[in-house]
Image 1 (cartoon, helix red, strand yellow):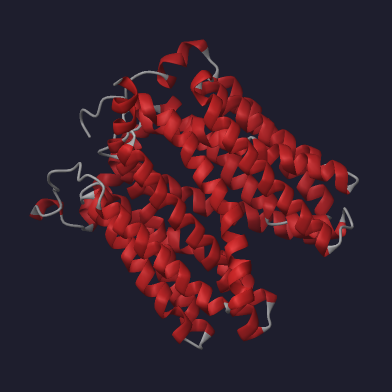
Image 2 (cartoon, helix red, strand yellow):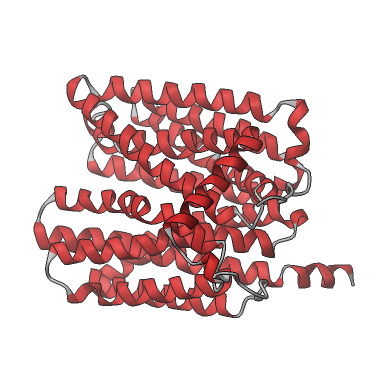
Amino acid sequence: MRLKKKLASWKYPFILLLGIGVSNIGEWIYFISLNLIVLDMTGSLLAVSGLYIIKPLATLCTNFWAGSMIDRLNKRKLMVFLDIFRAIFIAILPFFSSIALIYFIVFIINMASSMFGPTSMTYITKLIPKEQRKQFNSLHSLATSGAFLIGPAVAGLLFLIGSPISAIYINAVALFISGIITLVMPDIEKQTIISSTSNRLSMNLLKKDWFVVAEFSRRNSYIMMIYFMFNCVMVIMASAVDSLEAAFAKEVLFLSDSEYGFLVTIAGAGIAVGALINSLIVKRVETSVLIGLGSVLVSAGYIIYAFSGSFFVAAIGFFILAFFIAYANTGFLTFYQNNIPVDVMGRIGSVYSLIQAILVITVTSIMGIMAQITSIQIVVSVGVLIMMILSITLCIFSLLPSKSQLYQSEPVGTKGF
């Protein structure tokens, strides 16, 4: 009877995980296919690099206003709309032969994706009970890491029997299926407040909402410090170092293309194994330990890689950093869901994602320029040392005994927001 009740309580979380898995596999197929299509059209690696700039630019153009909409709209309906919207635009992508138009369509798709992230986070937080969140987040990491392995493999198979264009259509279908799966999820919001004239999107409303985010950040400085420091380590610095990864492997470690490809495969295996073990033991590990120690061990993997002198040592570093990503992410997501009020989660997530995108572009550009002026080895070494300093600081603050209640208490109150 108890088992039956437990399985029933996981019905919708498992359906949601299915949708996430399908969507992520499709995104990997789309990502690889789009790179090949642009490369075939232009023969330019610079044109392919432009695809990597579009995502943060779309975030910059979207997230300063998207949070105001997300917090006032029905999350399930918005998720379904964004999935179908992206599916339609991805499906029409192969019909364009102009690189400028392709960039524009990809920009539109990435704008929708920028909105989807904070929306799904808010919906998940409302749907999943507090006692299930850590386990759900570990399974979420397992689903996304599985997609990391399955997506490229499926893309490769599709390229053998078809073409990158057919793979693009597969992703459109995957997103459509994800939208249908979301449609059968419970509608946990009985009403929305966007219909009110006083709450229609305007500059005054945006200013008011930015003030709400600033005020919440001021009142909850520790929570937002942990949020910001984690993203400095796991997103900003990691993205900047990763941007030099291929050049570092070729010019410093003198790896061949096949050796570098094998290195990436090892990282994929590390992510999958780490996520699997994490899902099995996560209940017995404190959230603060997952965040703090997880980020330190990810940084340690980067340091081993950056100071390696051979393929074997670099492979060990890659496996370690990939293995502990799931632990750090599970801890962070659980902390975020338990301490950010759901009625302002969209605004907070959007505003901080905007700041994060600016910092990713800035730090990545600085490291790229410095690599040209000095050397890739020096820049990568300095970058991973900064990562380690930040992650050790994060670990110390996350393990403070005086803040332990924030890693296990009920979500903070929302009075005044």
